[in-house]
Image (cartoon, rainbow over all chains, first blue to last red; front, side, top):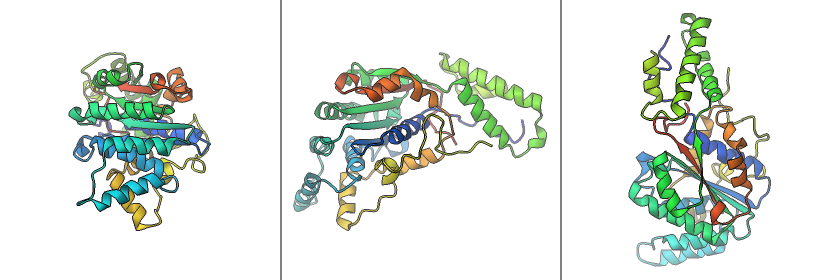
Length: 226
Length: 101
């Protein structure tokens, strides 16, 4: 294998990829102005800033940035400024502002990516707030991604949540490998048989992993192959 | 060679004209300082920027199968209510969290 371009690299065809795909798909199909879409990407490295208030605030921010800022949001901001140091936003105020901002909308989609990267002790509060939003604004649809261990927490707040396993299918993996091999900076070291072998073996190993082999990462699958 | 773009086979059109949401808000310039202050007050997070970064690096065609599943379609088209509100995409450990580069 020339250039070592595949070995040790984390391949992910899921996670942010899936969320961003869903968001863009919703956007492209939302051919009406009364459908709004907001996204949140959880990140280990940003846990400090990713408080529930900031997350829900970010949903509201995306929804109100579509046009004129609603009067009640502007008013709440002005009221807050009058208090010393500026009044902190409260979650329940944000949920109410969201309710008003979305009242005239046909549908609101909220996508939250990588919930397992959200600070675990804040997760119940975030899920509870999302549930409050759905209760206040029943036309809200929520798409969540994360590792399986967050499912339990999600089901506590949304008992009827539908769970769909996200896993790169063999075509996804093959396409990705072909793309990477095309980009190989030492193409002379490659021949057809080797290329076919690489694509076949890695895509098989990754597919096996996805049907339930826990504890095997794509990286170790590749090292095994190597 | 495969293009790394946001286009994929399931949908067509750039969607920008009608979607005043994430795609456009990345480039939104608020008219007044006041508006910018309000936006910062609502939240210091800028998920639309992150979305822009992720989608720029997304690999064409990967994951499209999800959009075709009955689970996704039912979720997207359902009329409302708490019971049908949530779809959870569960990714097994080791699949990796970093998006495609």
